[in-house]
Image (tube, rainbow, N blue to C red; front, top):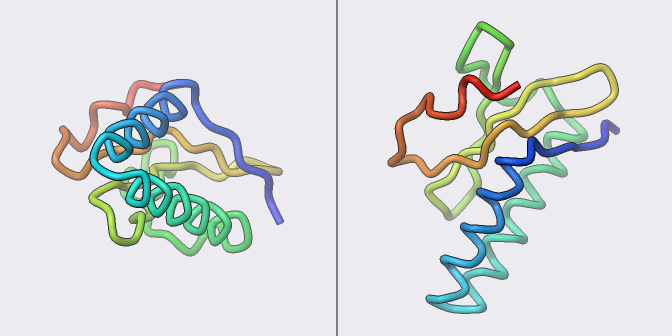
Length: 99
């Protein structure tokens, strides 16, 4: 099973989404965290299961169930690297220049 790392801005997006949902409901925020962790666990076990959405860099997209967010990631030798936790209504390539 691969490890998982987060681009610093992806980690920030994750925390901002949690805070947004927490203002609505702690239960919804908890569900968001659980669903995100489940999606990450799936990717750690089956990193190639998600669709490649950007050929350059082989960026893949995994939808976070029940929420309008995508995990955008790339596969590294021993890990998956989450590049963005992107709301589906945002510009779909705002994060593309992240290194």
